[in-house]
Length: 424
Ligand code: COA
Image (cartoon, rainbow, N blue to C red; front, side, top):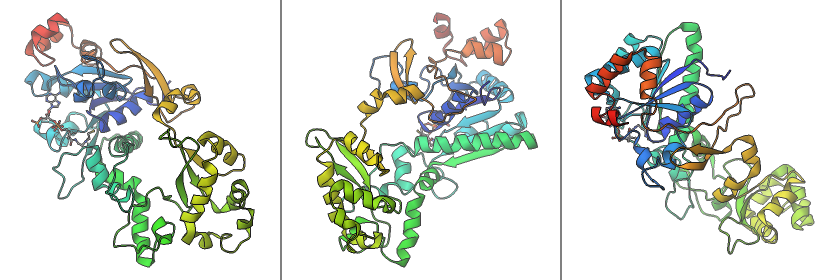
């Protein structure tokens, strides 16, 4: 069996943050029923389309292993169907704009009355406070959660990162909240609300920078390059370029071929326990005992010069040669892998972290599989559903509507225009 077998999720999510969460739950075996607006569905189906009239990769890569039902929840009959779904499901997950669920006629109190065991999980941009009514997207969260002000180079503007820490990061946080609430329910028998604000999720991931903010009160941040460059610190944590966020100084250094290949670089860490091995490898054995270089405090003011010397060495090797030579003596390094290299990486294919999926209208495409591996609950990645693909199946098998009941719902327009349904 799968870990979450028997758990039924009413998936009211759209775009990225919420779908990331429910996709994980589906991969762990939950039955995820995605409610979509008739006609359009999740807006991402049509966004960044690479093939005309085919569900985008944006949508397909975030909605695996789910079932799709179209339902107009503002239609009176649609509301009745939604009420029945609430009674049949364990968890409702939503990431609507603030107040949308209330306006739809389904505030927490109503849901809790319909199904006291239901867990209602929500993602919003902000928690309670001055910005609680604001709509939020990924980069807004990266900026308001402290990531952007601390990313980039000191003398450049704030930067956002390609990793979707606002959307997918918050989806991950919410998934943990949901399984925790499900666990508590096994003892209490009661549902509860689980909320996750994207600002909070990003700040949680940027927690080392709030650490540094407080360290600033006690002196300069010596592992930041600007310390060695003699540039004074201001009132807030500065952007630190590619300096390491931990206690070990690190930089991104050029490797052989960097002139042509934008990804011919490696992250190099001058970790104190392996300093002597680094000296031997780069050809500076005297640095092992020279008091100017032998200890971490002695090295801190001259990190730029030290990394420049290491880079002279890395530039004579490919990033993979540096990786092999360093790991042979336990020096941690990180080659900058392009998306092309990751897509072609056979070990990621073997573990199911990169999977090939077949889709009826798109054909074969690559996706990122479940990064969390459970030994007793392996993940099989299934394609995303077509819009409304499972509408009748869910009405019949989950909610118990008979033929005339389904036909009545169809005629009401609650699952789409009546004529459109007839033509399907
Ligand atoms: N049937 C009928 N109406 C539906 C429906 C359905 N099945 N599904 C959605 N709707 C309606 C809602 O009721 C709402 O109507 P209302 O505004 O009249 O009450 C409307 O669709 C818009 O919903 P909303 O969530 O506000 O969508 P949006 O496109 O305007 O905003 C976001 C998108 C992402 C900005 C917003 O949802 C948001 O801030 N979400 C929380 C934070 C978040 O998750 N952001 C990251 C997304 S990756």
